[in-house]
Amino acid sequence: MRIINPPQVNEYPPYAIMYMKLVPADGLLLKHLQDCFDSIKQLIYALPNEVLYYRYAPGKWSIKQVLVHIIDDERIYAYRALRFARNEKNGLIGFDQDAYAEYSDADNRELDNIFEEYDAVRRSTIALFNGLPEDAFNRMGHGTGTANDATVRALAYHIAGHELHHINIIKEKYLCERF
Image (cartoon, rainbow, N blue to C red; front, side):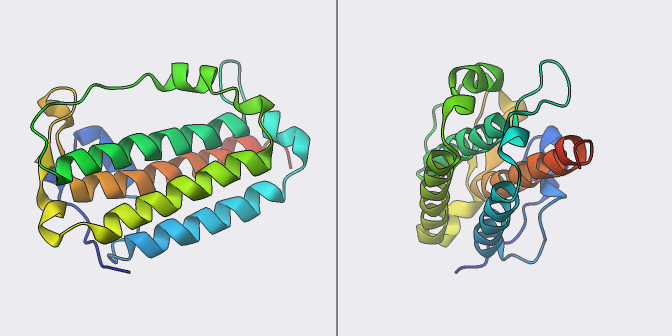
């Protein structure tokens, strides 16, 4: 797999530093994405079924909803990366992550079905970034307002860091209180 060097601070919105700092800076992003998926799958399948529905506070998502949120976010950010890589000049609209979680019906899905989708999206994401021309990674695209501009490289790292962010929350907020 190819090397994708970490983005510079000027390549992503300020809020995204919380994701960028979680990703190893060794450039092995695509390998990391695959390894992280494998680790998450192993972690989640080791949990008792009832834990998948646990919410650590009112209004918080279940673990199943978090997993589907990670999938949705990855799909959206990979699409953004594709648009930016192809030099799309039209800006993007945002998305309401809470509405996505509410309407995902994640708690009524089988875990195997969630991971089947997760695997398909992850393989697609890796294939996308592995197949882009090298110069595409430096292309800056426009999100919802210039405060959300990012390079293709930054979007790739966002996907990895966002996943790690939520897995850390699962470990700290969902599992520490239960086990």
